[in-house]
Figure 1: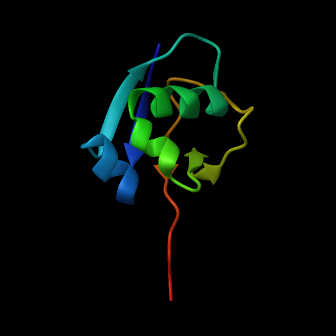
Figure 2: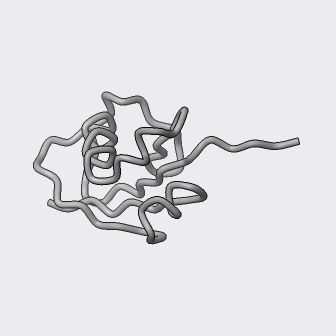
Length: 80
């Protein structure tokens, strides 16, 4: 099983790509995905917050992930 993750803003800058594919053992949750992303890209752990959207909806850390899911890392956004 692998997961495709879309990256936006600073998360894209940190990782160096607009999308990445991660192999993931089943079952995988949003929280496990975040932990793995922070392990592979330590600078992600320095962000004050980082939301995960699954199928275009914000997802809690205990939500399971499936290979067909549309997954995106949403960095903090400033506006004014």
